Image (cartoon, rainbow, N blue to C red):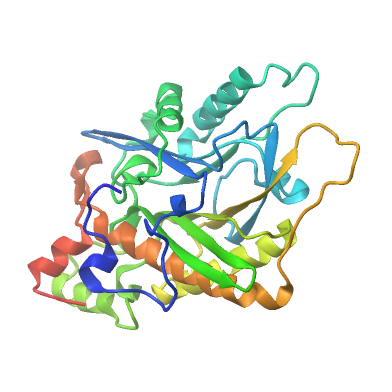
Length: 353
């Protein structure tokens, strides 16, 4: 990991479960993440790519699903994800008006590696997530191009930079600077130790609601800022969950629903204009694209073991959001609009957590 002032290093642990070695979504074996960050005046945006494994994802699909907490969003590919229960492309995150560009680039990427698509087999289901970065980024100019998408995929690695990077460059979180955050938890079960990894693109929340370890730090900051800007929730959050737990897509969907516990502990009330969307996959089973002559065996944990996964995804989501806040740097963008960094405000007002 690039050395950054993450939440845990500055303010202590979140929850009770142990993290993976990197405390990152890439603690799940095979998962990599790549960013391209665009920062020039009114262009404050980018793209983030999550690769579920390093093989040919179209030919070796993974069990996957999605869950919508609030549907104020413009994602692509989640309908088929829920219907078939598998994922077959990288997951791309960007701003709202560049979803089409991301989809075009993702399809190009898959066509180049799978000449049978659209010829001897069907088409491909690109999975794209978005948030609206229009306050800091001139979103109408659609700054993200297909070359940026390809670069993010090509540069994906286990080392995940957080904060005001990639698709998170222009995003806000609790009226402050938000962006990319990640975290992980280890899940010890009788048959092995598994990993739950989370990556968020945070662009949601109202400052006065921000809560950390039960403390209403947002209310404290709002009083000190004396209404330096209007706080109004205009954003969303994309949550990407990766795990090596052996689960069915039904079980995985149950787990994804518990991300709401982590969001709630940070103070989110999931407002009208905020799209909270979760996309998750398990690396435990690979599903071949071509029909097999024998039934496909899918391992699954017992339902009585689900509580450990529920706790893990809640804790990892909470810490990923806090990491997105803690690692973000202040950004000035479109029309001089700016948002400060959370850590800068703590220092400015001599506050500690």
